[in-house]
Each structure stands twice: as structure tokens, then as C-alpha cells.
Image (cartoon, rainbow, N blue to C red; front, top):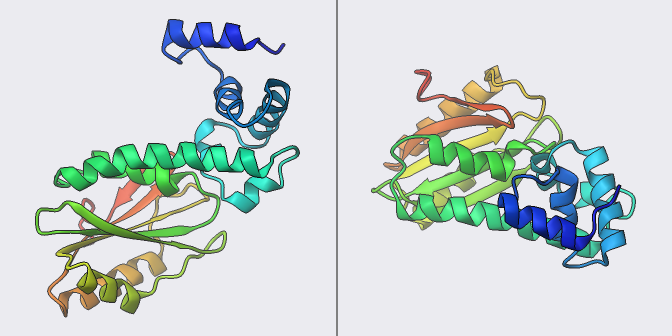
Length: 218
């Protein structure tokens, strides 16, 4: 049964949003760009297709557009919500040194952890281990491109001291593949030739992470 706008707003204020279902959260966002009935229908289709808000926000634009009823306006709103979450977490990485992995993993989880396409995100840090830049490479379902020369070139342009490589495993496994380990060795070797350090390589999924540094592989 669909709730009225007033009912949902009351529950948001009473529970600070915690009492809402995933569908109702999406419906509330989408109501900014659509009339309530259309927003409700789109939200229902999204939740029925992708279980969980994180999985919805993790979809690429083309993936969202194939869902029945999803419009460009709805996609734009979803992208905006995701970018808002990323910016909150990114701002902390820019202002505070990366001393442990908690904040970093939270950011990577929101950014690429729920994607169904394999993505590689490269983070560039200064000598205080603060984020100064990043690059995202989007590949196919099971494979993403890693352009080591391009990564090194951008590290030099940004005057980075450290690099963190990260990529997601859409299948959910946190076990590094042989290819993952080879790419890590190759990137670390390339970094050492220009006095840049590969600080870590992190495999991220919606359910956890694997750190090469923590596990003695880097």
C-alpha cells in the first residue's frame, strides 16, 4: 500500500529516516523530479530489480535506463545522490591523512563496491597521505583496464607521493587472482622507478575488502 507524502515525511522526522523502507527512500528522492505516483512506480521497479539502496546507487547510467519507467530525470537524481555520498567521504580523505583503512574502505564501498562492472580506481596521495586526485577506469563485467604508464604519468603530474590502487570484484569474492597479484607487482615496480610508493592495493566488494598491504602481499 502506497503511503502519502505526509505520512512518509512524518516517519522521516520521527525516526530521522531510519523507519523507511528502501523503496520509500528511493521514492522520496525521486519525488523531487517526478510526481508522487510516478516516483512510487519507478522506486518499486528499481527495488524489485536491485535489492538494496547500495546496489541501486552502484549501477551505471545505461544499466538504470533499461529498468521499466526509469527516466533521464530519475537517473540524474540517483547519480546526484551517489555523488553526494561520495563527496562526504572524499572530503575526509582530502583533509585528513589516510592512517587506517576504515574511511578509505567506506569511500571505496560507496564508489565502486556495489558496481556490477569491474572498475579500477586509482587514488593519488601527497606526502601527508591526503587525497589529491583520483582516476576511475570502468571495464567489462569481469575485467577492467589497468594502464600503468598512464597511472605513473598522472602521479607525476599531480606530484603524488603515494598511490592506492583499488578495484571491485562484482562476483563477491575477496580472493586476489593471479592477475591481481601480477598487476600489483608491475605497478609497484613502475612506481619505484619514479620515487612514488604503491601504498596499497584494495579489493572491494559490497560485503568487505582485501588489503594487499595488510596481508603481506605488498
